[in-house]
Image (cartoon, rainbow, N blue to C red; front, side, top):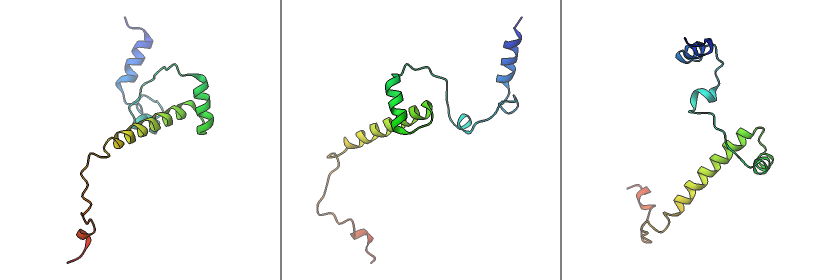
Length: 99
């Protein structure tokens, strides 16, 4: 026979959060998420928290991940330089002129 805790957990999981009586958070509803345990260097995290001016470690890590992704995307863009043909005689303003 299932324990009372297991039965309650199954009942809560089978209903939407509002019906289960759980508070809804905009962050929880719009984003895919799961709890993750990470071993992060405390000195690095404390310094990032201080420099970034964030209130929480979570905000600090999220901002750091966002900046990391932006940096990597920018680096990929740099790889495109020199791969597009350039025509010095091309007049891009010509198409803007009215007939």
